[in-house]
Length: 567
Image 1 (spheres, rainbow, N blue to C red):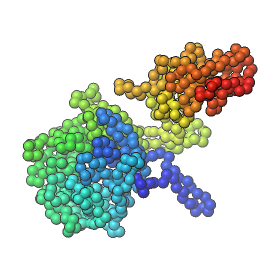
Image 2: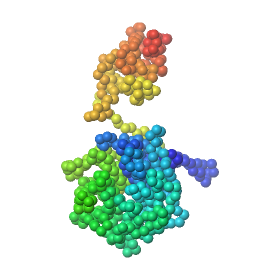
Image 3: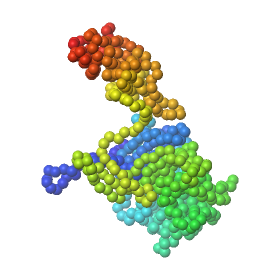
Image 4: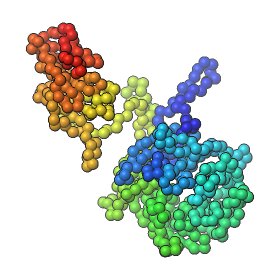
């Protein structure tokens, strides 16, 4: 974010010796997912997945089918993300904003600048207080559904309010209101209320937990009693979920209850009575009638809420979908595709189905992103004795625990593969208009190609794409003037990718990169076989079996495309 860039490395002076310095740099980026939300961030008609990983913010674009993610931005932040919410003050037809706060009590309101392709900061500030005890449950952010204000619970007995103007712009003034509840577990704003109404889940000194509501008065800068009376809830209640049609869900170890004033509907989680500790939830339908829940053991559930025409809750149905990673964030994308981010396991992309698979689950895994955290122990080893240490980590928790080996090096992402035994040599021909380097893909007429030489033939490959197979390697059927009946000694791109040269044992060919038409041919005068070749710019150096070295210039724009300069 502009104005919130985290330095990649820093130096720390040491006390002894006086002139020594310790250089510290991040060897592996954060991979544990703490928060994730979906929003129309890059455009009003776009669907984006925003993922927070400690000190980094990732923005992905969801494909039109909803079955894939395409990374767009990976932004470093100066601070660890504590809360992440979507701020949608302008409604449909406008891009969404992202509100986040850090563990050091800084907040920022971020937007996407389509012209520069960067994230910009719309508002930022410090919401810390000089006095106050930080709450044990961590920071909690709550946004009013009608975008009249947003609040932060950071200190016991205090609730920080940041008012908003009619257009959704945050005011520069933030203030605290006193709360009677000292041990607050969770809070959220209720939907469909004339005044901002806050629902809180708190515990008293006798370890009894209650659900209570408060009305927020921005003018008086105070809280007043809300429309619901205080009610006792299950002693293990841990989370509140605000429902779009009004009311709130209370998640407990043994039940899921829906409260809407005086009416209460509850559903038992497990028939055996075993406790279930819910960790994450995500909304499936915009009307809030279906929710995905995940517990600490990695079990995924779907909760269906039955409603009447007057938005009155008639039933709660909880179904088990299967076992997967223990999620810390759940985001439903589209077409039955769900993203599960985890702070203690790998992040996965799942495709939900209506019929059970062989293992009894109702989903299949589409993609997985590795996560090293949490690292509970590690050791540095040098098994090859070459001074290049490898880090062996004990990563994950419970059933998601694993041992992983981390080493420094260059990582490769496989795009396509094709089994071709017997390859003797290989060259890359970059696309026309590409500024050199093998294998790159340019924006010119000629595509990037691979030249594979065998004992008695040559094959020409190129990247192809179709709807069924996606990206894959395919053989170029129309070789043009390219000699595929002989083994290739050397091949290279010339003139910025506009032309290519192919050297076989019999001759040197100059071809147009787009059409593969022959522009020129040169053969050794004594008929000796070409054994070696090298190119620099438009100059080629050839060696033959007749103990002759020839220097040639290959210029497709010249009157003589291949000219012998010296031998």
